[in-house]
Image (cartoon, rainbow, N blue to C red; front, side):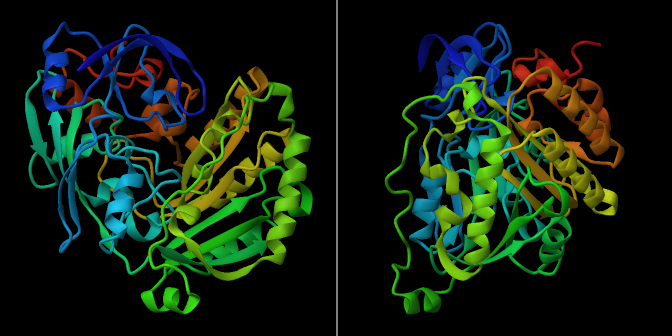
Length: 456
């Protein structure tokens, strides 16, 4: 147990920043000790790789950090089951499991994330349409609740608490153990098929033509206009077999990671204009058009290409950035995606980082983000008031279609939209408030959006 001095906390997007006290939790005894103290608000976080303010303490709260609570407890390599503490990273799980013929069932865009954070955010990957999100691969969760007592929940036992925790953004208690189911694989490679597309309709048609692909995602040029609006690069993937890798002459399980780059300084805000990103996007699309085809790609390169740059989040400048990600249903959803792409390109809000992909059916998580349909995610340098006005207009478009904004990525959504976008909010709130009547667990987003109904 370690009680640190006050320090500045930010999410991965670098905004907002909050000064708060840091508490380091390395074992169950630490958790019970902190919770036995005065009823002071706590925000549980790991490596703060969430883009939104759900991992940032609200003013006056303490940050309860679990990144050092990272022990692997047991592994059943015959059945692909792992028991671990919340601070274990996805990279560590991948390293251990691949050597034994297993891999994560749902892998998000970074392996820096912790297991506890992945449960609380119910993260998803490029295979949601086939395999669901992270919570669909969780078998059991141990929680240290607000009163310091421990509970074990699963789908069969205390099921409502289990699903309030999956995607529940850390409000049900401190996750102390996770039992995770893995998927079998034969190698550490993905057989990737790449298709460059000329416009939005072609991008979608390629995705729709391959519903059976295990992994599917498309990079979108978020700044292209006119006939090129929505042009992209569709990437499909399958786990490569031993035979395929053997024929290629590669190691069956390549070393994860390797040497990482680090940007030596934070660029000034003016160094990220739309013209720069338009030029970069056009060059990337042109290069991809010449490189379309099939090849073997290491898993980490396929799932987490940005992990190779340790601090890529500073590239947009000191003001940080926004990621605007939403999900829309199948019926009418593609038209919403098209209109959002048009508006972002017209106004110069966008960058290199923009993807569109298909979602499968939703799970039972009350605040879990994915719904059957499509999701579009676009990064943009933070530019202030006019940008916020534009995004509020897009929020309305998304909400009217039956869609929702991804809370894990959000720092600016008006609170009025939450009950509309997340119709099970009231049910989730009742479970959470019953389990934590003293409101011990909260975060900056909790207060901003009044998720727990404390302002009534």
